[in-house]
Image (tube, rainbow, N blue to C red; front, top):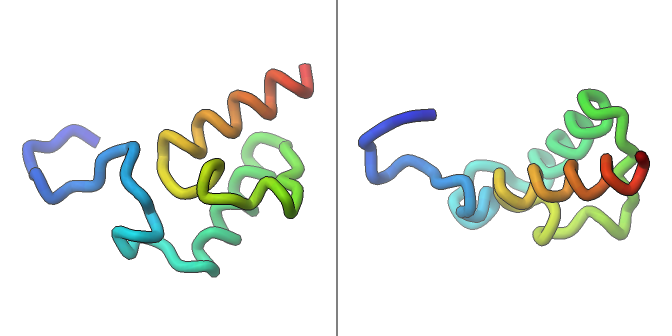
Length: 69
């Protein structure tokens, strides 16, 4: 989203720390990824490094899609 609002969430910021999602929200993001990108997110992949920011989610999906190709 394009905005001049300095309080807006940046793509690299933690969704959990900023209070955008909680643990249930993380599960919902996982379900969205699985349904939208036809990717099975393994339990050991449910980590902040993969799911805690927009940037992390994009990188995770790209890595996973590349590995499946």
